[in-house]
Length: 70
Image (tube, rainbow, N blue to C red; front, side, top):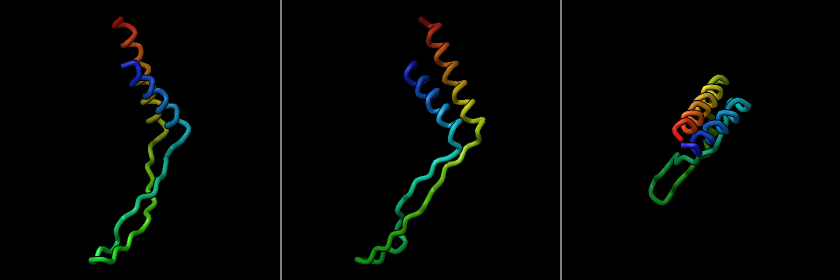
């Protein structure tokens, strides 16, 4: 549980500094027997800035709860 809470804190901090990330996927456009045509599609994932704060807070709460259980 401690490891997951630390991962949440790090991910939340990264989310606070960056509002999105993008990646490229390949999609088949035409698949007609031996002829295949594919295209690169640019994808982007966006989130609001406050979502990073929520993730950091959740990680801190989980870390505190894990410390109190000992």
